[in-house]
Length: 326
Figure 1 (tube, rainbow, N blue to C red):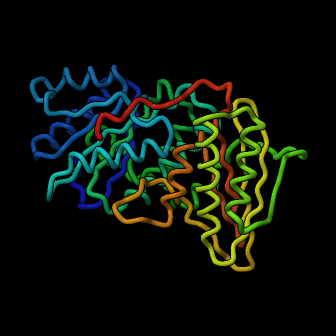
Figure 2 (tube, rainbow, N blue to C red):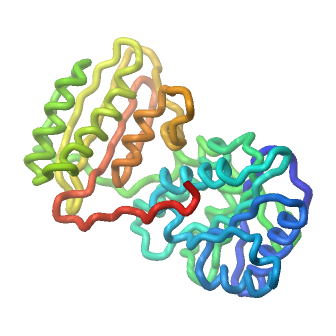
């Protein structure tokens, strides 16, 4: 197994058989446990069973999680990674994670969001003493997803052999090329602004959520998500935003558009990491991401466009089970 530095290591593993998965996973886990490092395997139940069987008595020291429940959305997934590291980190040692994404059954929008997250991890977790391997089962993942693995990871593991990914792309540039499925704003979408008044945005968000049939807690959380996103955009000097809202099947969508004379863009991966001990400028944006089904943020020159989608009243509650690492 290749030696790694002190910072974040992020590698893919493309496997097509159980034996190929174990050829990567067993040495990775075994070497970590032998060094006293915390090791997590967040993968499929079948792979967890295979890995435990191959490790024998050493399997008791391995932390495991079913990957389907280890963060349903990118913002939840990143929080789960950080919680595990914070809970299990040991001074002077790195943390090892096998983190297999779930691709089956995802919509085109969700697949695009997860591709962007895989790339974003290289920025969001940079400097963290974590070595992460992301396995991709080529028997089940779509072909474009397998190709994307080599663009979102600096290298891949073939058994114990580390192979640089020639297709690896700068995360910011890569994220800009991953297009989400088009969802044109209806011509009759309700709108307000431009305005610098958060109270006006709150009133508009509440009015549209009520009109869409949201009530009680879901109504309050929808308004909170919009206001936190708006607050982030309005924090820029002399900022004003226009807001539009419309309904799509199963969701209520809001678009916030900020235009300024000077370039006041936002970081590509802003708001993906949970708040730290000290208040940060992106804390509200993280909350908005956490409360939304999806949140897309794009900047081009002086224009910043933020689109968030909130589950509609007739959509079943889709809450992830709690992370096993508080």
